Amino acid sequence: MKLYLIRHAESEANAASDLDNPTYYYDARITQRGVDQAKKLNNRIKNLKFDNYFCSPLTRTLETFSIVFPSNKPVIEPLIREHLYHSCDVGRQPKKLKKEFNEFDFNNLNDFWWNNNKPINEKKIIQESHNDIKMRLRSFLLSIKNLNLQKIVLVSHGTFLSQITEYMLDNCEVYDCEYNEVYKKFF
Image (tube, rainbow, N blue to C red; front, side, top):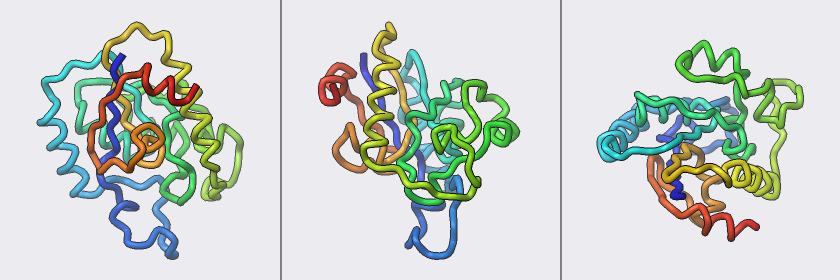
């Protein structure tokens, strides 16, 4: 099984010069440059066929997915969300996402999914450790292990995907790899 890892298009937080300044970018959206990046990626891969699509529930990945794969519906998967470290990594409740992205199915998404389904102040940032994101990646790999598919797309995030790639992907960069090789690395 081949995995196609795609980092989201440029977001407001990516364009910010300092994420630790007093400006907060809760669940950051993509910029106009990000829209252009996603359109270019769509043109590059529009003739490729994939068996299944997984997308993080953060807005920047949902927006990217909508542009890159406009005729497809992803599995919304909170396990592949970004490392919760800054305000841009704090998500929104499924009912709010559904209003904006009504073509997607958020039924398997729990409230407070960005905080492991534990209720908190929605603007509070409880940072994850690197072990936390490693455990999420392992859980995701196990969840797809027995899928009988050839090509799977993940639209996710730089820090999360860097566990596999061992470097930070550029916005809208595609990295392909074999599932079995990734699995061996983490188990």
